Image (cartoon, rainbow, N blue to C red; front, side):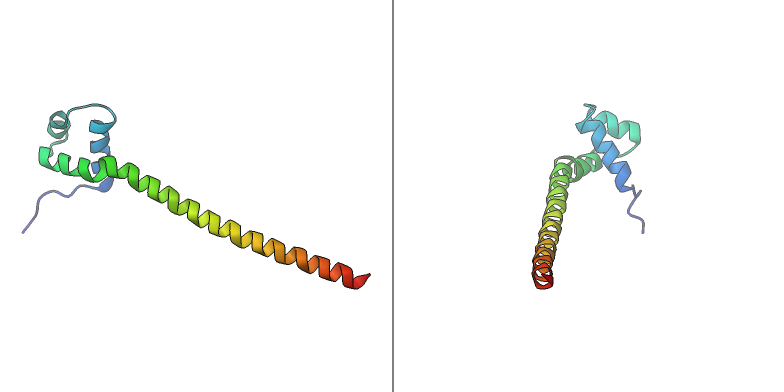
Length: 92
């Protein structure tokens, strides 16, 4: 038993952009693309405002990873500085 047409994520996001960014009405976009108005409203709820939140959380995740990497690199640098001082003092 088929549940109807399946659309790609990209298709859904582009359909939502026509409404949210380009200012077209939901009814016009749904009619033009041959999809139901309910589907477009559902997609808008999923990909519209939440899409910006997801990007923000993705950016926050990336920042957290970069901060962790920076911390690790600083610790490695500090260890190398101490080792350089130790060996420089020992050779004199």
